[in-house]
Image (cartoon, rainbow, N blue to C red; front, top):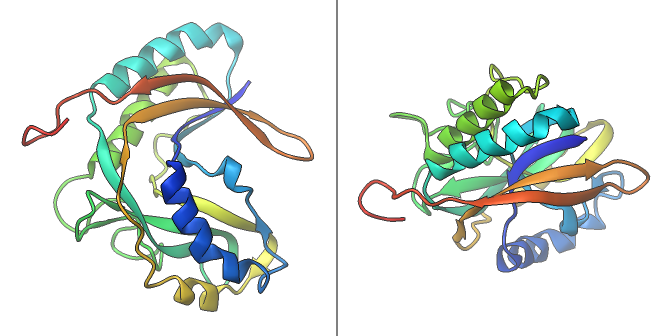
Length: 216
């Protein structure tokens, strides 16, 4: 089965983001906008995973999640892969701990924070969580996991079948700063591909570790 590990943002955060996005959808009809029911933050893409791997996969992912604390995130700004001038993916950026250090660049993925971490110091808690999950999945036998790939936290909002210049769209979202929300549960999700992609949560684990400073 085709799997990924991710976070599912709560309804209020999605409502706020959808409200900000609404006026722009009609102006960009050539983009394929993602159904908000499918919005998620991928932590680790596992690809096709053999069923025989699933028991150990569940065990290792649960162990990895248990080592991490809940975290506060907020949507902020937007960007595009591979660039706003030649976009194939338009995404919402993230801010961690509702503080001044963004997780992932809300403007240009080629910034000094290209790896998804803060500009200075060590990796952010979100990036460390993603790394733990990828390592655990790989050890369990999810061979399509690429641990060498830099993790860039984002929520995909739209895709394009051809290069699209979305610089003005990214600029329109420069000032967007959503309300903070708590990420407290990690989901293992199965992708059902077809005319309409459908996602199914097959397992979930709470983030239960105590955060530095006593939170969690």
